[in-house]
Length: 117
Image (tube, rainbow, N blue to C red; front, side, top):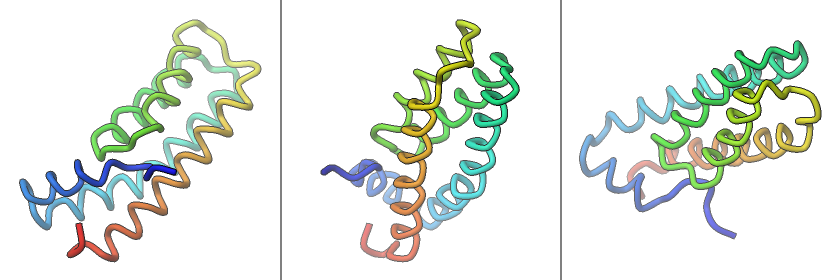
């Protein structure tokens, strides 16, 4: 099983920006749950525009920190929002939730063991 975040990308980012990487990772940890909740609300309220926007936001932020699978899952939800489809997204939403949890746990571990990146 591969890591939910590309460790080589994280290592390169650390080399480029040093300790500032911790702040970037911490920001993702703060924003991701809020954005994920926004995706859930958009699906419940059948708001395709909000679904597209929230999924796009999580896609971009997860790609920026080197997530490997989450951006593609978010893209799928973003496309559903563009198509105006909000119903029947439970399986895809569950995949996004699970992958977001994996990324969050991985990043928390990475912050706690920052010197090893």
